[in-house]
Amino acid sequence: MILIEKLNLRFADKIILHDFSARIETGKFLGVFGPNGAGKSTFLQAILGLKQYTGRILIFDKPNYKGNPYMGYLSQFRQYASTNLLSGRAYLSAVSQGFRWGLPRTSPTEKKQIESLIQLIGAEEFIDRPYLSLSGGERQRIALAQALLGQPKVLLLDEPLSGLDPAQQEKMVQLISKIQKQFNITVLFTAHDINPLLGVMDQVLYLAQGKAIIGPVNEIINSEKLSWLYDAPIKVINHNNHLFVIHEKSGSNINVHDHPFC
Amino acid sequence: MFMIIHFVKELLSYDFMVHALAAGTMAAIVSAILGYFVVLRAQSFAAHALSHIGFAGAAAAGLVGLSVTTGQLGLTLLAAIGMGCLGKKTSRSDVAIGITLAFSLGLGILFLYFYSNYAGKAMSILFGDLLGVSSELLKTMLVYSVASLAGLCLIARPLLFSSLEPELAEAKGVSLELISILFFILVSVAITEASQVVGILLVFALLIGPAASALCWTRSFWNGLLLSILLGLAIVWLGILLTYLTDWPASFWISALSFFSYLISRNSRNLTQ
Image (cartoon, rainbow over the protein chains, first blue to last red):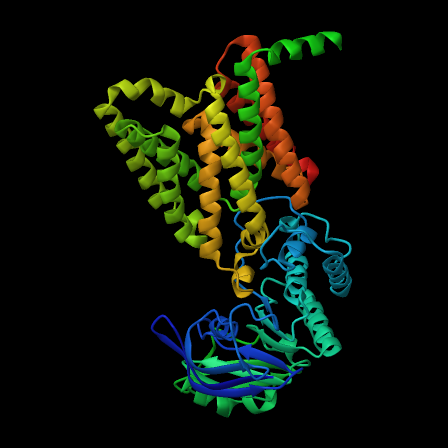
């Protein structure tokens, strides 16, 4: 369980969250949404203990800290310094217990865990190919396996769908949902488009302009709540089980907002 | 076969050749291992700058009557700590590193101007003097080798993690700054050692050439490291042999072999993908 109390979070001079409190129960799937720059990644980094804040974040009743083994993380910002031919397996193995001092040797137990994760994410076919030559979807699956190393109880997934086509997005969401249910993991999942996640989310957290609201999907993604959040008239349209958020400007001027769920 | 054994016996009958082989072997192994991480972290330019910064330290030490190697290592270590503090920004700080590099070379030239008797020694620092390695220097190199490899054994795991996935490593509690500082300290020791063989200007030949070549061929960390060591050893041993046969400078042969090793590997890379 994640308990957030009176969280105040900033990114440079910008307020991301002000006196925000929430409780995310164990084994729940929370979608985190908001426009570019709203602070979705910063929020996840605060939970990881990588960003400074005031207030309290408790992970299973204990204050959070950097390197908490309960947490698995998939970062949106991944930079690869060099071009090399190291395989997906090499990238996965390097993460296993990579925070410990000593030589990068994988024990039989770690090897077993790596093999079972490769099977879990269905990467048997491409895991031994050069990692940097893999497709976006294949790399994201390996990144998910990296996040799952150490059997975390909380998964923080920052934009795992970015750069994927709709079919790959669907596969990725189903895979994460399956893993979440199988291991009873709490998932915090940031995304730009709410639609691929509609069937799997238990709750939604929506961030915008330093404000945040959290709750079940239909209670949050509606015209009333989003208009309050944006301080502007917002229309939510459900078309064939596909949500569209429209930003209405001065009555006749209707524009699709710059971060539409479509 | 008999001819080869006779030739090797002849080669090893000279003390300077035995010293050259021993020094070259140590420098090749240490450089190949640390160089592997340097290339993986895309910090070749920073490593190149470290070697040049050492020149100012060596020249300053010569001016005040200290051991050249001590002066070189001292200033390289200081620069290493400075670069390490940049953490993951090191590979994006080429302007700052480049300016520091130029300033250090300038300082080295100033020190040489004040102490012109030192100019001959400066040449061997810049271009190496593999065939002039003394027993004393060999002992110093052995200490450097053991110290840098022991240090690497301690940090290799988080170093590899932070080299491949820095954001994830940070989230898992690895201090990128600390690892970066420790790594650059080890690199500065390796550079000081390698420069005894090929000189400050050609350190790249041992530090980057074998490692960059190995990374073009291998898909696993350990295979890459092993190939990097084998290539480093082959380059140095073959370089010494060619020096003996042609009487051309050892630094030339080593840097040329390193260049062709990388050229072939780079062009073959697409075949292995």
